[in-house]
Length: 243
Image (tube, rainbow, N blue to C red; front, side):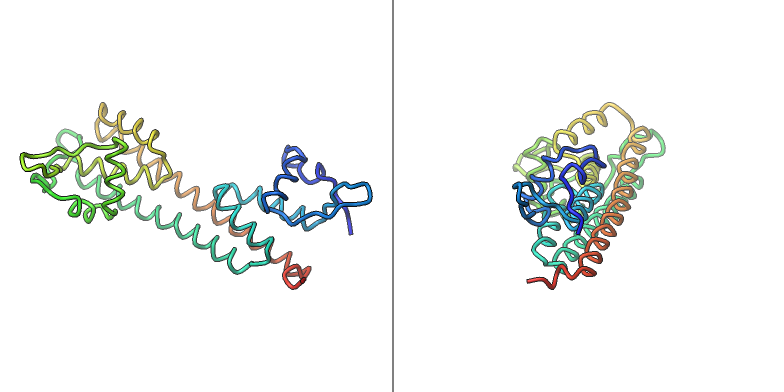
């Protein structure tokens, strides 16, 4: 059995051997035994784990990869694969919801002035419950958005929040930006830009987020394939049947 130095495994990625030791500490790769000289003795197994971890980060977040790799290290392959499929399903779900958001925004385009239309039938005091149903998001999410100053609902004399068509469109845009992975600060920057530009200018920017999400889905599929390749290799060497 070939024994690798840490740098032999990390060099192809232009990374320090220290990272491999951290991966072992974090549970990304199995524990490496020590040799007579007290150096870690890395094998093909450690190499495959490290390579899979690095490649999978193209399609999943660091946290998601960490969860999956720790499950594989603990020989819980079914749980790891199910988790990967769930992550991929979430990417697909967000992509589909985002395309629906774009469709909704296009429907509200005023062909005469190319601005975000304000004639959506919400010109009356409405509750959070009504709006949350229209944009398919929980009330708690809307409250967080308002607290983060992503939007401001007008209040009438009876203190009801007043949502008009323009504000509804803004909520759809916020939803798309959040689905595409933007943080609150990034959302505020985009929304500030929208306030000074017309709809025709903004639509390509929003559609580019959809393209980014589609690319992320493809990367996620490749990462899922990488995980399956690792599991197949480990099955062939009977890793999961070892005590």
